[in-house]
Amino acid sequence: MLTIGPYTFQSRLLLGTGKFADFDTQKQAVAVSETEILTFAVRRMNIFEPTQPNFLEKIDVSSYTLLPNTAGAKTAEEAVRIAQLAKASGLCDMIKVEIIGCDKTLLPDPVETLKATELLLAEGFIVLPYTSDDVLLAKRLQDLGCHAIMPGASPIGSGLGILNPVQLSFIIEQAQVPVIVDAGIGCATDAAQAMELGADAVLLNTAVAGAHNPVKMASAMKHAIIAGRESFEAGRIAKKRYATASSPMEGMSL
Amino acid sequence: MQVLINGVTMTIPIDTNTVVQLLEHLKLNKELAIVEVNQVILQPEERDNTPIKEQDKIEIVQFVGGG
Image 1 (cartoon, rainbow over the protein chains, first blue to last red):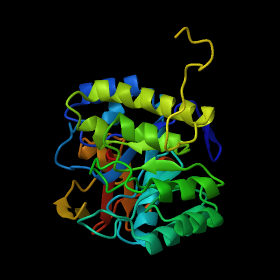
Image 2 (cartoon, rainbow over the protein chains, first blue to last red):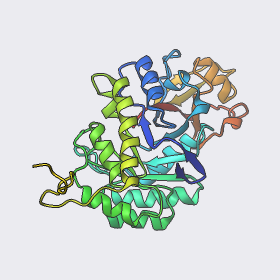
Image 3 (tube, chains in turn blue, yellow):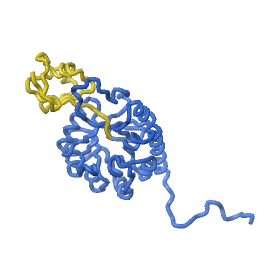
Image 4 (tube, rainbow over the protein chains, first blue to last red):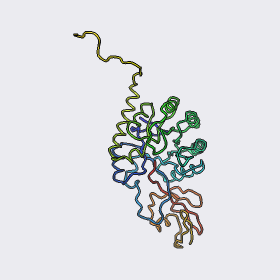
């Protein structure tokens, strides 16, 4: 069971809603993934296009917890405004703080992220900051009272997987709130690895939306996250340099 | 009357008195629209009665796909 602030979830997979080729595929992928949390961005409506389709119209919104992000913000103030707009939808009170400090790497700005987290907590939001995989920053965010920490595995949309598992494990070890590995997941192995490191959940988007078969990959991610979590809970064996026989040495008929 | 909507100067009918009337005039989905008037973000229940005036600066946003 995943608990974020006042909310509890059975699924440990958070799914982004960007970059899907079409709504039908997306709807199937969402259903197959069994995710309970969907992320969104906030953007201007096209005021000249009354019939613009929206994914929210395709799903039963009441079945999901919506997690809007502040993507597009470069400062804490911009992020707070986007969060306030999102909350004014009347659909949610959670916010993923995403303040990008570099257009090339899309890595988050730690100073602005910290500032925005503090401001949004003061306004009563359930705050999930997207951060770099820095343990001290994670601690500082936690000390502010954020409801989950979301360190990136690698740059957004890169599919590079977990570049620094040691650093990520440091964050997980000290965490008092859920750690949700966010960004950079490329395939099911990466999602399972995040869970085996002890992450509480994984947030991914491009790995599913950009897969050759998004629906099948959504299913793969669901299974990988369940498998990774069970593997973590079961406790892996210690690694050693040389072999240990699995079969008994006694009673051989040779 | 002239207003600025999402950065575009538009002329809207003079009898567009409220935000909800503006959304209806633009034929936008009222359930999805999040509206800010002169940098004040409106809660859903405030849309019906919030007046629109000449030269108002209006932002209309919504949730879109994102990660």
